[in-house]
Image (cartoon, rainbow, N blue to C red):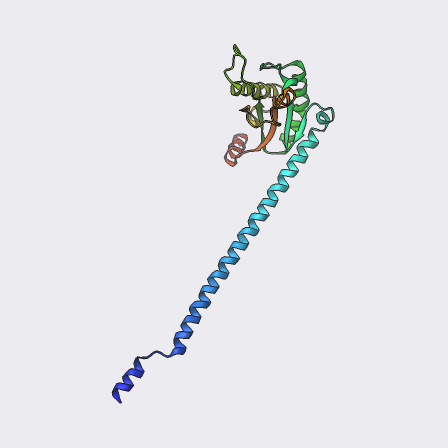
Length: 217
């Protein structure tokens, strides 16, 4: 009898084991549910932020297009995907970095609209130079298209600043023969790729803070 009573005391009831398993299973399900809810909230927040970003970009694009209504109507520039395009043939002679008279006139027509836009938006203007894919002629002052595109972008940037755009809101960039507007297959397409583009770029938070502090002093 003592042996049987001891065996009964050592055995664990099945219902107790089942209860522990159910409790563990419920705990796991709760953790999974919490994780799923967290992922859904994160995705919802990301989608909302992306939607807000796209709306803001579209508003900036429309504002810039509206400011450029006059030069666009006159056909002096193009406006695509938020970028102002100016034909290199209008601005420069072939393989040259010196602005032509027509090029200066086009830039003059852009100054007031760009000033208006910069007054309303805390952004920068990036002036980008592009060339076609043909190598430089022997004897040219530039060794390659990178040098030519860089100097053309600098020339346009400096001219815009001389015409009144703030120096701390405009900068130059060079892309050489890369990122063509159309494939380089004939003289007409290469003429389209010899161009200068002006696009808006958000200012970094640190840069904006430094400007605000400087204005406060």
